[in-house]
Image (cartoon, rainbow, N blue to C red; front, side, top):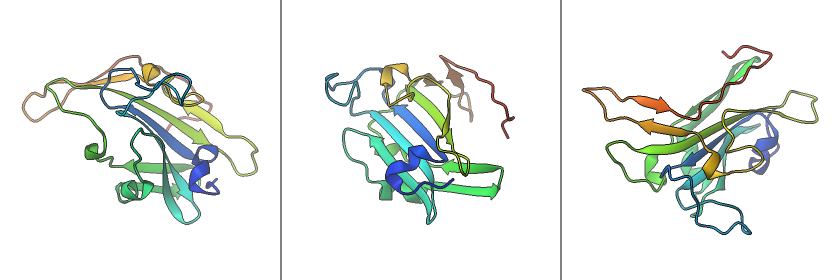
Length: 168
């Protein structure tokens, strides 16, 4: 089901992505504000409106305009059975410096709302996006020093879940 507008992408078929670009699992804002986020933490929601792909940037200390991300996003439905998200997120928008073994926090949540349903079903991969955004709960991704022509990835805090329908 497409979202009614870009501010309600979370309530329809959508993909939420949480990023702790520095991988430090900490934040600089006091708990009584919007929570433990820092200027390297981001929460994006990608989805479809009737007019096409949409992006909502929900967490970012410095405002990133959705229009800057739209050229890097393709969301389409090749069939009635699924939605494809192709996201080319420019690292230049994220405040992170490179290193020989950088680690970042990365989390995903797929939101599924069927036609006629009053509520969505959320399929989280990690715990950092459940009910909001918590950088300390984002699973870590470490990019290893590449051998010639390759980059190694090591996932930590990996969670696995089963669903009624097989993933395609």
